[in-house]
Image (cartoon, rainbow, N blue to C red; front, side):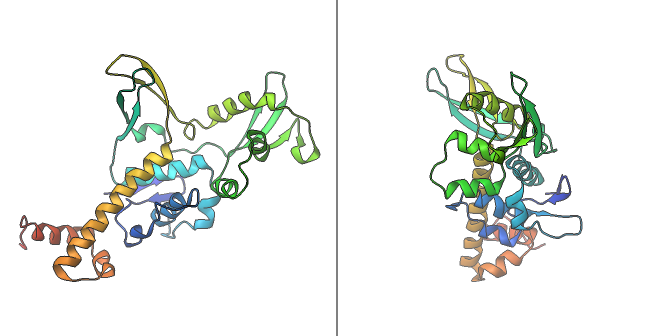
Length: 258
């Protein structure tokens, strides 16, 4: 396993650190697992861990790139996705090479003009937005858009600039064009009927599911070692990965001390 480069940060493989068993994949708080995982696995060039408060302030796009860097640090490629065919319902495998998704996050702010030439200044949503929206009455699409529109024709939205919900579809397309990773769509041909499907992919959920499997395997290893040697969880997790592997091989009768 190796460290993966990420702009300004180094990523280590999830499952290689003692704190990884504490990442709450069943967190009720939207984005909580991603924030905890990034804070556990990313560090700056001086070895300082990414503060959780800073991870909450990262855009969803940047947070996804951080998760991808952590996955790449473990050499886990490609990501295997599943989706039913929209025509016949048969399951389709959608392998996704995460290395092809790039390593440079999209700019957090960007400019866009609608078909009438109206100029918008927009910002990408961040993790803190997710957390705030979760604790509100389900906001309308218009209310969500207002939180991400900073100015229209150089006037702030707070000034009461009039704009219509008719702009929402084009605005949504503008966000998707600037940040295709957060609204990832894949093309897949059905092996059963040949139908070409346009599949919306929740990349964050897919990445977190893979990390949850790795965490479960780590906890299984802890349980086996604790049962065999009566060590505590902290003692087992303090062992380097290669030593845990050696002890596990001995339990299975497949290794030697030499």
